[in-house]
Amino acid sequence: MPPCAHCWPCHGPHRGMSVPGCSSSPCSSPITLVLLLYLVFTRFWPISALYLAWVIFDWDTPEKGGRRLPCLRRWSVWRHFRDYFPVKLVKTHDLSPGHNYIIGSHPHGILCVGAFCNFITGSTGFSELFPGIRPFLTTLAGNFRLPLFREYLMSGGLCPVTRRAIGHLLSNNGTGNAVAIVIGGAAESLSCSPGVTTLILKNRKGFVRMALQHGAFLVPSFSFGENELFRQVVFEEGSWMRAVQQRFQKMMGFAPCVFYGRGLTSVHSRGFLPYARPITTVGERLQGEEEGVYLTPGGGTRFTSHQAQCCPVMASLPAVGEPVTVPKIEEPSSEVVDLYHGMYVRSLLKLFNDNKTKYGLSEGDELRIV
Image 1 (cartoon, rainbow, N blue to C red):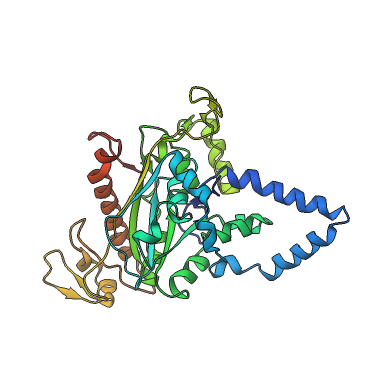
Image 2 (image 1 turned 180 degrees about the vertical axis):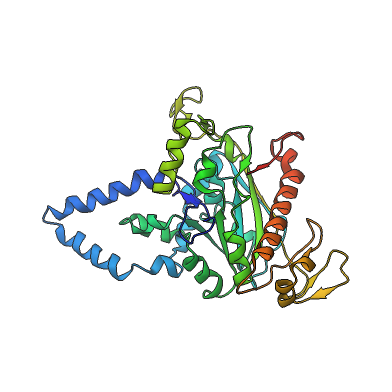
């Protein structure tokens, strides 16, 4: 299974965000830890000692771009993984290798299968659709403190969801980097159920501030079908079970969901395999005409990023769906962050409404943002 992704922090630099396979991290990582501890009490103890020394030496590597292995993206197993659902990536705009990007991935679902398959594996043709763009996916920083599991994460192109790690990719790794963040994170997974699309986004603004500080373009993306892979018991807000889930999520970084899928031998039995439901990921880029020059709605007034910072009221940019450039502002004000966050939300809503009937939803289905 893919590793779990986690949500962008609302305010602080190290609070939750999620990557595919929430169940993979809690299950597989303890196994590697137990294995290394077991070796300590055998004649193979030097293996554990050498690996511990290596981890200490290599401790900061995840924060500095990681150590991805391109061959991992080409594994044939990922094609079978893609075809099981199947997963499809739809291109709506070109992405220039001359810029960096923050891709907001929605919704979280239970395992973030769409985000994992599109940004970590090469099975959906991301590199062919967007030549010159290197995709990364963010996950909990704590996952990179787990022995062996950290090597698996880095080899696939995952990085910690911290300001330092994302800032390195956007500022110290050249151009052509696309950092995917599952904005809603673990908290959003608690509201995941078929037929209901609820996104936790209203107060998630850290990713917008990061985009402004590094001049990275914002790219909203939506994976239709992600919420259909499992059936979850959703506890009502205010119930004691919901309180337990939320407390656990704040303490551990991931949410203990009560869910089930299909059984191993029959689609009519219950188990923990995801149902085979199509997942289609569609994206839309927010981009402008010229580097460092921005337009008011009518296209008449031109101003610079400094003017956008000093006069945020002027920055009521073109209508949703038209290209909008994210300026580089080292210390963006709250008003400017709110402005571009609102533009991002409107673009995401437009993306959802323009494509929902194409990929399994009805005209009456709505996207609920909380």
